[in-house]
Image (cartoon, rainbow, N blue to C red; front, side):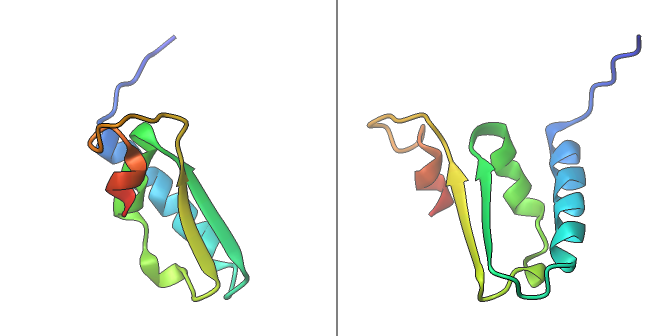
Length: 78
């Protein structure tokens, strides 16, 4: 068995590219786009916004909560 270690940013870029290709085929179809918080949050940085339309709602799911805003992903998402 071979284990490959890749930088988080490279994984986020590959994921965003695949998501963007899927979005190309939607043609303004209403879309609720949700990603998990945590390490998946970096994918948002690489998404091609040209494939989102006025019919797209983007959100983030995260079960964590803290009174410290730097810990809460929803504060970073704003």
